[in-house]
Length: 133
Image (cartoon, rainbow, N blue to C red; front, side):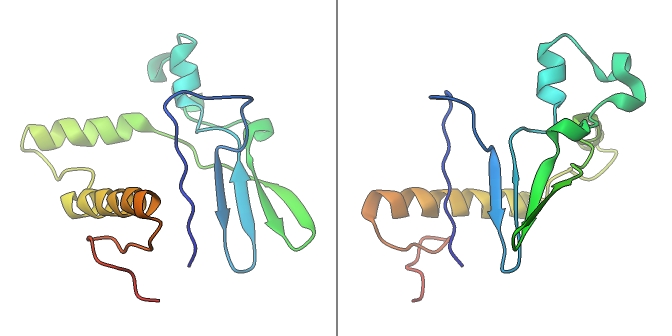
């Protein structure tokens, strides 16, 4: 597996592909998030939008590339409110946390390995060890 991770707090230059994923028989790319941040920044809200909240319009869908064929691929509906509702329940002792703490730690280990790899030029496995070759 080969993975490339790039991030920036401030966008430099023209906006481009936001996410790109390559598989063995296809790839997928998309230029935007799920739209909820844009809706919030424009003054929208889940209450005001109702059932339209988090729905990604067709013109903002990602693209699935298979061989020489590219077609629009529907984006999943985003719903940040579900996460924060679950979080509030967990804080009040009425439910499970919405993200397993072990998954959060594993994600941080991947980021740390990527940072170490970038700094040293070496392949680094999550968890701090050298990756097998």
